[in-house]
Amino acid sequence: MKKGEIYTGTVEKMDFPNKGILHIGEEKVVVKNALPGQTVEIAISRQRKGRCEGRLLKVVTPAAYENTEGACPHRADCGGCTYQTVPYEEQLKIKEQQVRALLDPVLPAGYNFEGIKGSPLTKAYRNKMEFSFGDEFKDGPMTLGMHKRGSFYDIVTVDQCVLVHPDCCKILRATLDYFTEHGAVFYKKMAHVGYLRHLLVRRGVKTGEILVDLVTSTQTEGTWKSDKNEEALLEGWKEKLLGLDLEGSFAGILHTENDSLADVVQNDRTVILYGQDFFMEELLGLKFKITPFSFFQTNSLGAEVLYETAREYIGETDGRKVFDLYSGTGTIAQILAPAAEHVTGVEIIEEAVEAAKVNAAQNGLTNCDFIAGDVLKVLDTLEERPDLIVLDPPRDGIHPKALPKIIDHYGCEKMIYISCKPTSLARDLVVLQAKGYEVTRVCCVDMFPGTTHVETVVLLSKGEVDSKKIRVEFSLEDMDMSEFQDGATYTQIKDYVLEHSGLKVSNLYISQIKRKCGIEVGKNYNLPKSEDSRQPMCPPEKEKAIREAFKYFGMI
Ligand SMILES: C[S@@+](CC[C@H](N)C(=O)[O-])C[C@H]1O[C@@H](n2cnc3c(N)ncnc32)[C@H](O)[C@@H]1O
Image 1 (cartoon, rainbow, N blue to C red):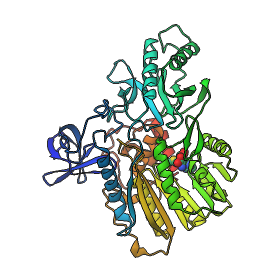
Image 2: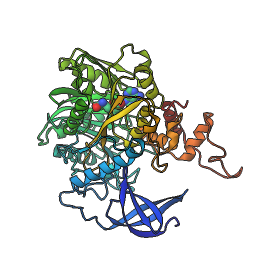
Image 3: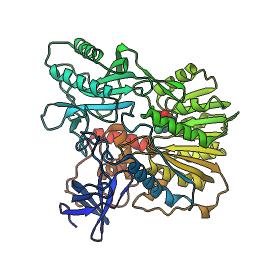
Image 4: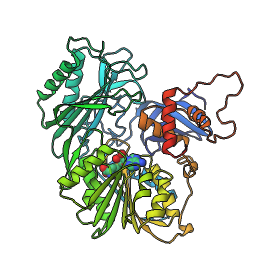
């Protein structure tokens, strides 16, 4: 098979998270976003080391189970939801199969997999959305919404997005119309010029409280046409929002300045234009204060199912000391605190830790402490010995140096691992089992209907180390074994860079920076073939992001 050749075939299954698998003759081809049962036309995009990848050109025949009724009108363009046309029961089946396919090779045969729990809401379930300003076509009119499927630049206006409450869509539309009317220009992320960057909308599903934050650059000179100064421009925007006919009510309208080169929603300075800089949400009878940039599960009702599941797995906490590692705004800590003797939460985002402290006080909990810092470092300073540990790390899983530390220094009878990425979970479970933990219960909770994401909850109990029980027969195609060695794989580094800076980096760039940092790259790997051959050199912005990933993975 050659790059560019076009074929038609039927998708057999979908590997995590969105890799449709089909065979053209004897050849296995991986096609992103192609659903099982669909007959698709594809163009071969990559053929390397026995792995063939194709680009989806069109769906020739939909799968028998697909149903477009009530599906999102933006689904063809927006990169957000792959499973829009898949009935919910079928989505759950696909996700369950994908998680099992990743866990089966690393867990003992017959392990206790308890299935998948669905989300109480399958539409309008998200309490948070980050929209970007941009355009859909080169020099087209300004848009505000999500990245077009597979595109780094093009933005599709998603004012009928089905994942959020209609209030959020009205706010999006009003904001886009207002700034278009005033001739404001969006920030071009490669040229680093322009004003409007992102619109963050958070709305409590239980409380109906709305927090809106407009993120702009500080470039005010010549970036809009109306005669208003910045203050007047933002005042007009605020008034427009306050005049909307919404079901919920505004807790706050904010303006954040961000001049970072990376395309991520973050703040340099936030000003309150109306109300306050947080909104309240309720989970399992507790109240939580949520600030614009702190982590809070995006599906409030789904989070209740997730936390109930974790609480059930944990069982008795009476008189126990608990560590909640990667605690965010302290939700899990506070759900466990009423019965526990003491709970310690550790979280890297200071804003989230401050919110956790306020939340615990408001919920009348006096036996929780929250520490701001990197789990890897904070673990060295804790004197308390926990009876139980809850691990809820970010997508990359637990830092390769932090996991052995957690087990060796604090390893207690029971641990709960909540994971939003089954590949990193599978990797960490190998380490946990090798260190004597047994997986006693596993189940999935779907917090993200319509999308390919899924959460997995695992109960681990300390048992005897029995190497025969530990199966490490990985398919190298699904998982790179070098993930278990010191440092990180190229895929992990790429994922980290994309997630934390919004930048895409190539293997070539990573290897260039590895060399600069004196890290082993492998003989002749990505070296130019001859002295005068020209290779693109990693731009400074990407170098910075790659170095940050190296630091995160403890490689420098
Ligand atoms: C999946 S969230 C879980 C949050 C919380 N348990 C909840 O359910 O809301 C992961 C959290 O880990 C935090 N985090 C990421 N890296 C960290 C690190 N190295 N040390 C401590 N916290 C970290 C993130 O800021 C985020 O709040």
